[in-house]
Length: 451
Image (cartoon, rainbow, N blue to C red):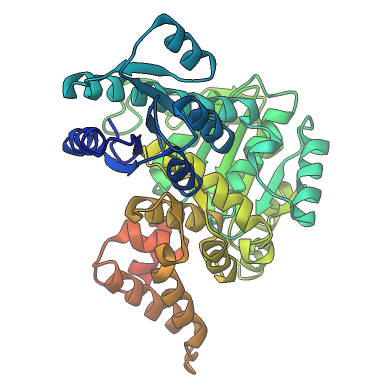
């Protein structure tokens, strides 16, 4: 049970109010108290209480039923329990009719209160999870899964709709963390192949030998440990789409193999003698400039032209800052629900901090930053102080004077600095740099950086 959700006790009898608050605090909940209805409403405006216990009979012109009705105007989803010393069928019916979830009779017993709260919060948690699940299902793998109001992104999404049912190869370009796989899924699930498999492969995550087997499969005995015939990702994607992420990192041999598949739609499994034919749409993605890679001789020009039939370029988050509030609110709702944290939103000052930051890791970095803030926050709303560390990092980046050294040396120094800051944790360093872990390992090897 998540005990971070706050609870409100409203009773004009101080002994009763404090006793119930003490019982709930012993169970680990955060509890506020109010002596009358008006005070309760002021508290409810500031805090979205998970549960409110409200005494039926209170002085001051506002009884428990009226307080409940006003509170539900402020918080329509509020769970309210009416407390009464005079339980009758009429009072019970009235309380439930006006929106009370439960009613209990004085004197209250700690065990009864604990069980009631536990049951209601379990239900509330389940309801919240169902809301999130319904939202995910309603927009799963559709354009709505990409949250944007940026004109360039809207044009991009319109293009994905136009090409969704074509078999033409698509090359998605963009910095790490911009959501290239989301765009690939939007293309697949909007078209005629939507009911067929969507298979994703990270080309940077595996060595040449392993990637070859991953893509094309292998026959029994083709290498040590190959105990049986295994289908590759191209076969698994037959009839559907294969998404080749970080295509710019594949070896010269695999470039030649992939070119043949794109030309002929046929290939051999590793160690196999029989050709395998597939009907697969290829969507590739890269954070590299492939035309420069071709010029430098690191990428085949014929493969580049085969891949680049339809090119989609995703703008980095710093070029679509109007999307930051939308994405931030989305991540707050999603992550808070997944973590069981009662955080309902993000303040205007906090949003300004996020909008002013340059986001080198793009949307993926924004999601990680929101998760960190939710984990460490003790408020019902994320505020600017929850992102103080991000402000310091952003300032240090803006104030940094670029030394007069080659670009490769700048990259080497940046990697060393991030590794030191992350205490040698390669996974965290890669996320901070906005690159894949395998890419970072390649750079560590290239620059001979110990880790």
